[in-house]
Image (cartoon, rainbow, N blue to C red; front, side, top):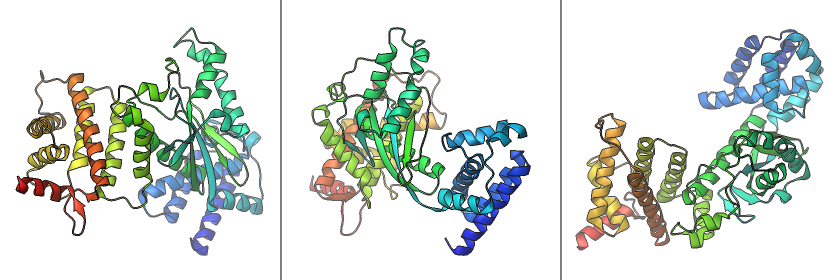
Length: 418
């Protein structure tokens, strides 16, 4: 950022702050923050994020409540009358405001995020899941542990409506026994840090969802800013499923890869961490994200569409524009290398059914069962691991690329050799 841009930004934030002191109508303040964000960032998506960063920062400085979650600053400002606002307002002079604004918005900080994944038990400490690693509750900073316990202690009253047998002690024990993701991000403002951390944690959950088909979610998190130990977080009541506390490894026995689960988690984790991934690695990463999303969906048609899309994202490349159905089915059959005719027909039928659902051409009496979902699910898993085998043999591309080993070259060679 050039000095002139920084100066313009600071002057604009200061003008907004001065107006807030005399005008408690947020509808008049928000357009000015939008205008400031527009001048700061030109890309629409980035500009939207910058708006929220600026809004959080300016409001939090104005209300001066470091122990109040930042989103509450905005809720307070939007709901309160002028008298109530003045009780929270921390009147700073221009120099104090600029100093605080520089730190909160212009200075890059390191954030440690801690995100419990409730009902996920037994995953060994320090398991890498992409850009996060797992921790035990006792490994958290003391302040973070204390904050979580404070939030959890009132939840058993709500949980009684879900399971009347659980005691407060058992409830807190189960929550604190859940796996906790630790994610480190660098960002200037808290809103950006929240967004980065939750995106990285979501990728970690996609890895887990690939092995254990359960919709693990991010409900709570806390962060610590390293250089000043400031803590904050987001809390949302998440009732526990309250199954028996069997470990993730035991739950995976039915999975054909369960006996080497941690090794396979490491393989997928390394793909997510790759700084400059090849085409096959990019496709696996993208497919796992799509697969993870469909776990949360109950509607069978939507699940099926996403699973076929997941398979398509693994096998097709930009050059497969002509004869897509034939190319899609052929690639799946040759990549798996077994029961080629059966796999070919299965993928062809799946693609036709997916297209019928998407384009509204399916018959009213045409419906799916869990059997079709399971078959497509298993096919996605098999293709992912076959592509990982190809990576081990030096293949890096799906489509032909000079000097690189590709799946298209492999299929062509098999066809002509036979």
